[in-house]
Length: 285
Image 1 (tube, rainbow, N blue to C red):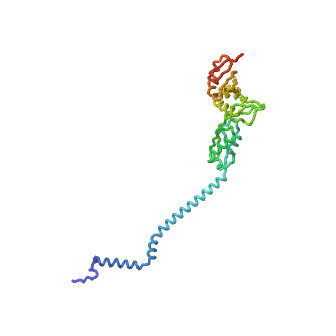
Image 2: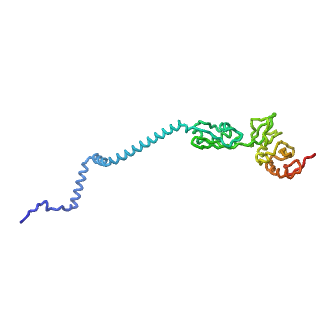
Image 3: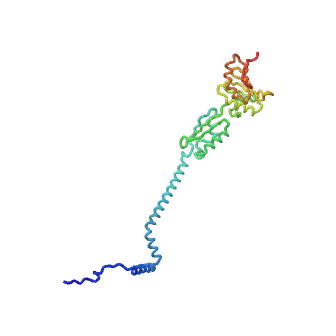
């Protein structure tokens, strides 16, 4: 029995010759050339549209988040500015001796209820200005204990004695500044300065006195200017133990350190001379 095969089914695809492949590629190029450019670009853009939409949505979300965050920050700042936390709730002063709390706060110019931004970041400037406003202040440090509580630590210049003028005693500080306030009687434990015609000379003596040990300071009753032609810097001291001392201003603090040892060896009250060397002699009858 004979079967007749379909001619199309019996044919198998054959490979194109180089010439036929070239003709096929040329036909495809001619076909693409006839396609409008805008159609080809539109097709490429259409492929990218989903990705572009995703990127645009992400950028929009980031901008919206940044805008909302900034808005919330502004709201929080406004709430903080009108709240009590943005104002000084208390001012604590430590280390004061002669000065009152009010005098210190007036010098640093910080009061309860002031804006915290008037203090925060300005502590050093406020401390420097306080030293200029009050001569008794030696050191000032301003800090925050809690978010709105201010602490002011001060160190004062110690009283170095008194100067008598027109029957009144004016306090002298260890920095050489003479106070404008006067007292009827000086406090015990500090000397009275007398016979000083030059303010500069008095200032030199006070700076020397400030270097003395506390025990020697308490033993000095009076300090007088007693210049001579041979020694214009001579000073005369009256001690609480009954002795008298002659010394020079420039070596006063250094040589007075030997006074306790010299006085302990004296058999009777007399004069201790510290101008040149160091020696003592009893008072002449």
